[in-house]
Length: 410
Ligand code: SF4
Image (cartoon, rainbow, N blue to C red; front, side):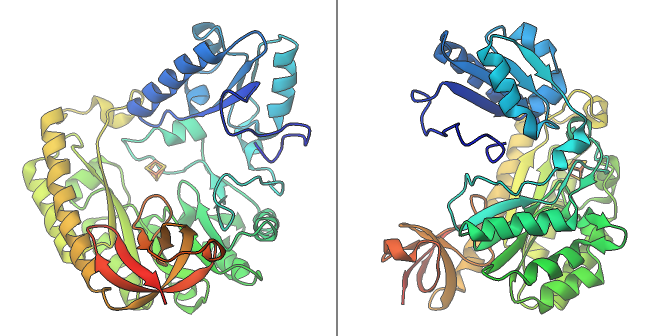
């Protein structure tokens, strides 16, 4: 959306400097919805006769034009399919026309060659698809974002090149399910990765949100052969108990997940794995959580994100019997967090004394090949110079923390 704005618009860093505020909202779970509403209430105070508020994102997909009535201070509403419509909506709002623009979702996959970065200059997220064809019973993303639409390979490659020209060295591929990618008949994620690999100037390619049952031999092969795809995969499994997986409507069983992990570890030299777990799902017992804890001990994921289940209106799981109390959800979360903390600490300790290639993000340090920005670990580096930012430096590790490391550039 930022890239599509005419050059006469200027992005400013603070609310005070702005005339127009675009709120890109989330409504994945109730907590995100509450945050959206709180932010809107803050914006109501900010709004004056000369200022305009535009709302977009998933909260729009959920509530649609009803929001115009509910929040009378909003000047325009844009559905997620309207990436190129933002400036039209802003112009209308300046003429005091309050519009709700909601183009078909497939149009939101148009080319994004005019990307304007909101990340540091050396890395960028690259969305390869939008929407999801799975039907996990806890998730309302398919309802909000629709079924999967894949960005054509040539569009992705053009977008990647334009990002590299802006100084990007690390591309992070995202989608609701990156492994479902099919840019055209027979052209899958592995093919896209092979093509991205050829782009000059690109140093690291990272893949997030892989679905365990979709990791085939070709993908493993390209990961292992590549010089640029980092040996890291984010593969949310959500749970390991077969009954819970089935009620979650996840594809594959515990054995399938175990086999996938083994295939990845056997097939990709030095691969590190990140996963996501959901605790407190309806019907989950303490035994199921203990089974999950044992699974974590067996497989020792390098990074694990743990979330508590949130019953969302409109999802199949919200009406299931056996909803877990808030207290139990919290204690299960605490149990697994504590376990992952000790796993992470002991994995980190093996790096003390080693020198690792670190992508320097800022004056405080950077990331290993197997740390995605914001969500994984950070390496605190005590001698970063400005010129190191955005470069890969060899860092000698001197100390391990629970999730982070400490070191200096050699
Ligand atoms: S695969 Fe991810 S986005 Fe798709 S339904 Fe399941 S949890 Fe939601």
